[in-house]
Amino acid sequence: MTIQWMLAAGFLYSEIAFVMILLIPIISPTKWKDIFNSRLINKISPKANVFFNFLIVCLLILLLDASRDIYRYSESAGNVKPTITRPKDALTNIEAVKEFRSQRNLYITGMSLFLMFVIKRLVVLLTTTADLIIDLDSSKRENSTLKNELATVMDAKLRVSKMEQERGEAEVIKGELSDKEELRSRSKTRVKKEE
Image (cartoon, rainbow, N blue to C red; front, side, top):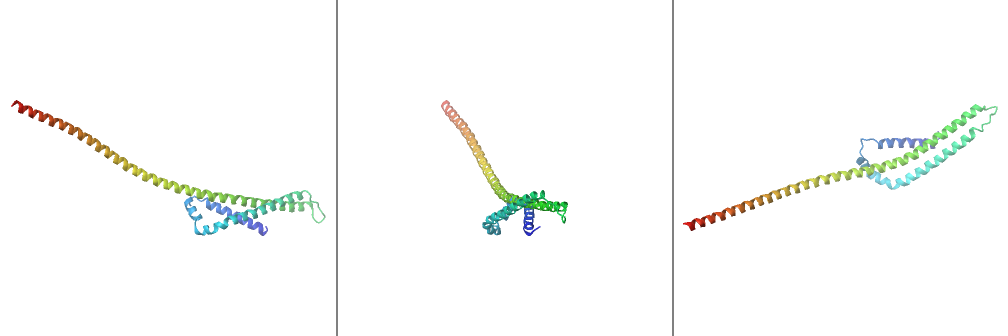
């Protein structure tokens, strides 16, 4: 394996490890958002888009190179001509090994490209989920404060209605009392008139 393919394979393995770390359920999306919004990441982020595009171009070049090698070795596998020094089986095996290596290289670069987009999407989804969790928590807090305010308003309204009911009862009692006072005063005037 040449250096370029070792680097591509190492990059693929690091992407796999990063995706596995991103998928750990112990680390919440809000923690990931804090990590993504850290000072170090904020310093790197303006250059990250350029680096991301550079890696895509490099991996596309490696992908095209691997696909060209597959085409070349699959075409030459059928055109093997044996010589006295190289029998046909040995040449076929060498060509098959070269074709296998080129297919392996194609899979490595294809998976690396695919995982780059998966990682980018995972980061976006994690930050969006963190924003939604924060919004949900603030909505719950607002809901609980509104619930408490509503409870106090309902208690006050209940107290006011009780006071109005008591005032109404007091008015009825006052009315009855005034009626009784009037009857009493009439009866007093009658008693005085009769005497």
